[in-house]
Amino acid sequence: MGLNSLNDIEYYLPHSTTCFVCGEANEIGLKCRFFADEHGHVHLNPVVDRRYSGFMDVVHGGIQSAMLDEAMGWCGVIQGDSEEFFFTREMTLKFRKSVRPMTPLFIETSLIDSKRGIAFTEGEIRDDSGAVLTLASGVFAPIPKEKMAETQNALLFIDDGRLYHEKAMRICKPKPGKKG
Image (cartoon, rainbow, N blue to C red; front, side, top):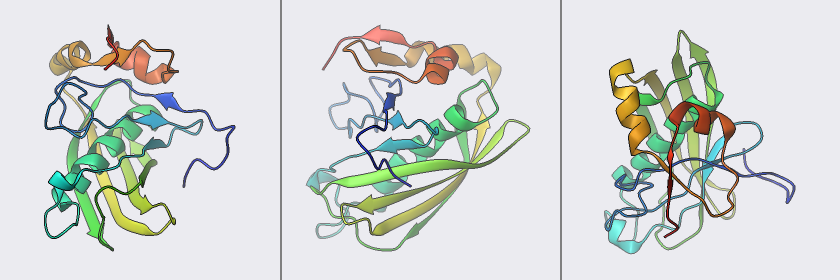
């Protein structure tokens, strides 16, 4: 897993202003930017602030879970056979090593299987040496059709020249937003 060359393209994904993980207007949020590579693997490269520590300079497991949850859900959208957005049905994490705040982290997710619109994904958090810190797997189901329009209305993209993923834009129909 991982973007390995300068030729790899980053296809950004829409965000919601209020989302704890990706909401750029959420004052207490992580403000992560998700992107997919050319194979549809979803990534984010956060540096998590110390205020999200659970115990003595270790990023809280709930914060790790939130980042992996969002990334795996997006992966189901990008790589799955459904034309809908997903919610988390089930998620499992294995914490292997401490995740330190204020250090570069690399999160990557991939689709394992897709059956009858249900996406089965996995993800991992690595440090800058490539060591796997946290492993996750998840099962994601399409949101109900009546909630799809509400979800679409909550998504934004920043019109600042970023290249956005075509499937995400088609399915989610995000609105343009301001930078910052």
